[in-house]
Image (cartoon, rainbow, N blue to C red):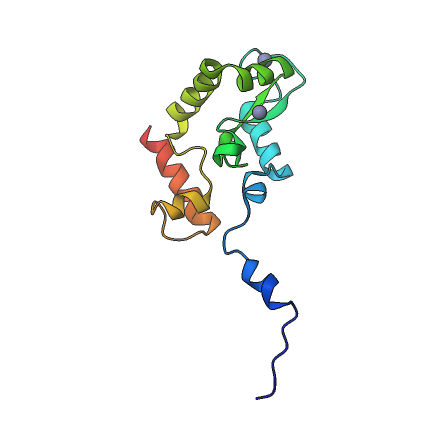
Length: 136
Ligand SMILES: [Zn+2]
Ligand SMILES: [Zn+2]
Protein backbone atom coordinates (compact mmCIF):
# COMPACT_ATOMS: atom_id res chain seq x y z
CA UNK A 1 0.00 0.00 0.00
CA UNK A 2 1.45 3.30 -1.03
CA UNK A 3 0.55 6.74 0.21
CA UNK A 4 -3.02 7.69 -0.68
CA UNK A 5 -3.56 11.12 -2.12
CA UNK A 6 -6.87 12.86 -1.65
CA UNK A 7 -8.18 14.98 -4.49
CA UNK A 8 -9.40 17.61 -2.01
CA UNK A 9 -7.86 19.14 1.09
CA UNK A 10 -9.02 17.51 4.35
CA UNK A 11 -10.81 20.65 5.49
CA UNK A 12 -13.06 20.57 2.42
CA UNK A 13 -13.79 16.85 2.84
CA UNK A 14 -15.09 17.40 6.34
CA UNK A 15 -17.58 19.91 5.01
CA UNK A 16 -19.12 17.42 2.60
CA UNK A 17 -22.68 16.64 3.54
CA UNK A 18 -24.72 13.49 3.34
CA UNK A 19 -27.89 15.58 2.96
CA UNK A 20 -27.98 18.26 0.25
CA UNK A 21 -28.23 21.92 1.29
CA UNK A 22 -31.55 23.63 1.88
CA UNK A 23 -31.04 25.59 -1.33
CA UNK A 24 -30.82 22.36 -3.32
CA UNK A 25 -33.64 20.64 -1.44
CA UNK A 26 -36.12 23.45 -1.93
CA UNK A 27 -35.18 24.32 -5.53
CA UNK A 28 -37.85 23.97 -8.23
CA UNK A 29 -36.45 21.89 -11.07
CA UNK A 30 -37.96 22.05 -14.58
CA UNK A 31 -39.31 18.56 -14.01
CA UNK A 32 -41.22 19.56 -10.85
CA UNK A 33 -42.40 22.80 -12.43
CA UNK A 34 -43.81 20.96 -15.43
CA UNK A 35 -45.42 18.36 -13.19
CA UNK A 36 -47.09 21.18 -11.24
CA UNK A 37 -48.51 22.60 -14.50
CA UNK A 38 -49.72 19.14 -15.57
CA UNK A 39 -51.49 18.69 -12.26
CA UNK A 40 -52.90 22.13 -11.46
CA UNK A 41 -52.91 23.90 -14.82
CA UNK A 42 -51.43 27.15 -16.10
CA UNK A 43 -53.93 29.37 -14.29
CA UNK A 44 -53.77 30.81 -10.80
CA UNK A 45 -55.32 28.18 -8.48
CA UNK A 46 -56.91 30.93 -6.38
CA UNK A 47 -58.37 33.30 -8.97
CA UNK A 48 -57.81 31.79 -12.43
CA UNK A 49 -55.66 34.59 -13.81
CA UNK A 50 -52.51 34.24 -15.91
CA UNK A 51 -49.55 34.39 -16.15
CA UNK A 52 -48.52 32.27 -13.18
CA UNK A 53 -45.52 31.88 -10.91
CA UNK A 54 -44.63 28.77 -8.91
CA UNK A 55 -45.21 29.29 -5.18
CA UNK A 56 -43.82 27.11 -2.36
CA UNK A 57 -46.96 26.46 -0.30
CA UNK A 58 -44.82 25.76 2.75
CA UNK A 59 -42.10 28.34 2.35
CA UNK A 60 -38.50 27.52 1.50
CA UNK A 61 -37.48 29.08 4.80
CA UNK A 62 -39.44 26.27 6.50
CA UNK A 63 -37.87 23.58 4.30
CA UNK A 64 -40.89 23.43 2.01
CA UNK A 65 -39.72 21.16 -0.79
CA UNK A 66 -39.48 21.89 -4.50
CA UNK A 67 -41.64 18.82 -5.20
CA UNK A 68 -44.79 19.59 -7.24
CA UNK A 69 -46.98 18.64 -4.28
CA UNK A 70 -45.70 21.71 -2.45
CA UNK A 71 -46.04 24.01 -5.47
CA UNK A 72 -49.01 26.08 -6.54
CA UNK A 73 -49.41 28.13 -9.71
CA UNK A 74 -50.35 31.63 -8.52
CA UNK A 75 -50.74 34.91 -10.38
CA UNK A 76 -48.55 37.82 -9.32
CA UNK A 77 -51.31 39.33 -7.17
CA UNK A 78 -52.20 36.13 -5.30
CA UNK A 79 -48.52 35.27 -4.95
CA UNK A 80 -47.85 38.54 -3.14
CA UNK A 81 -50.92 37.95 -1.00
CA UNK A 82 -49.70 34.45 -0.09
CA UNK A 83 -46.51 35.95 1.30
CA UNK A 84 -48.19 38.86 3.07
CA UNK A 85 -51.42 37.43 4.47
CA UNK A 86 -51.16 34.59 6.91
CA UNK A 87 -54.80 33.51 6.48
CA UNK A 88 -54.47 33.33 2.72
CA UNK A 89 -51.26 31.27 2.97
CA UNK A 90 -52.94 28.95 5.51
CA UNK A 91 -55.95 28.51 3.25
CA UNK A 92 -53.73 27.29 0.40
CA UNK A 93 -51.97 24.92 2.83
CA UNK A 94 -55.25 23.51 4.11
CA UNK A 95 -56.48 22.89 0.57
CA UNK A 96 -53.32 20.94 -0.20
CA UNK A 97 -53.38 18.95 3.05
CA UNK A 98 -56.93 17.86 2.36
CA UNK A 99 -55.83 16.18 -0.82
CA UNK A 100 -52.29 14.98 -0.10
CA UNK A 101 -52.15 14.75 3.68
CA UNK A 102 -50.24 16.92 6.13
CA UNK A 103 -46.82 15.72 4.90
CA UNK A 104 -47.37 17.08 1.37
CA UNK A 105 -44.61 19.69 1.67
CA UNK A 106 -41.82 17.42 2.91
CA UNK A 107 -39.00 16.06 0.81
CA UNK A 108 -37.50 12.59 1.19
CA UNK A 109 -34.82 13.83 3.59
CA UNK A 110 -37.41 15.32 5.96
CA UNK A 111 -39.46 12.14 5.89
CA UNK A 112 -36.38 10.00 6.47
CA UNK A 113 -35.20 12.16 9.36
CA UNK A 114 -38.62 11.82 10.98
CA UNK A 115 -38.53 8.06 10.57
CA UNK A 116 -41.50 8.06 8.20
CA UNK A 117 -39.60 6.30 5.40
CA UNK A 118 -36.76 3.74 5.71
CA UNK A 119 -34.40 5.28 3.11
CA UNK A 120 -33.98 8.27 0.82
CA UNK A 121 -34.74 6.54 -2.48
CA UNK A 122 -37.07 8.43 -4.84
CA UNK A 123 -39.32 5.37 -5.17
CA UNK A 124 -39.69 5.07 -1.39
CA UNK A 125 -40.64 8.73 -1.18
CA UNK A 126 -43.12 8.49 -4.03
CA UNK A 127 -44.91 5.41 -2.66
CA UNK A 128 -45.19 7.05 0.78
CA UNK A 129 -46.77 10.12 -0.81
CA UNK A 130 -49.21 8.03 -2.85
CA UNK A 131 -50.28 6.15 0.30
CA UNK A 132 -50.80 9.46 2.09
CA UNK A 133 -53.02 10.67 -0.72
CA UNK A 134 -55.09 7.47 -0.63
CA UNK A 135 -55.65 7.90 3.09
CA UNK A 136 -57.30 11.33 2.70
ZN1 LIG B 1 -54.52 34.80 -8.50
ZN1 LIG C 1 -44.06 32.10 -3.11
